[in-house]
Amino acid sequence: MPRRTVDNSEALDAFVAAKFEIDAMLERLAALSADHFDTHPDEIDWGHVGTLNHYRAKLREITDSAFKEGEHAR
Image (cartoon, rainbow, N blue to C red):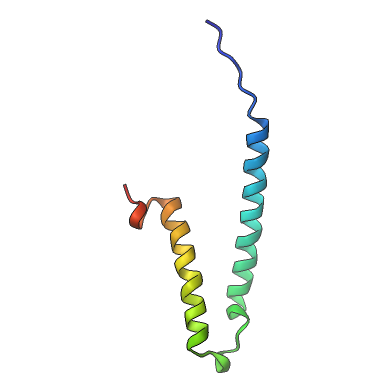
């Protein structure tokens, strides 16, 4: 029986578009981090710490899922 070829071009296009968007977000985050999240060291207070911990928690969810770590470990 001949094998059917599946046209996955739409899925591939959607995948590449999502990857492009992720790459752009990562680039922006890296630049913001390099600039100490647009905060001068003399201005840092506990609100800034809370915000950064929030960002860290969200990124941890993503990295744990992507690398099968934490609650996503096998």
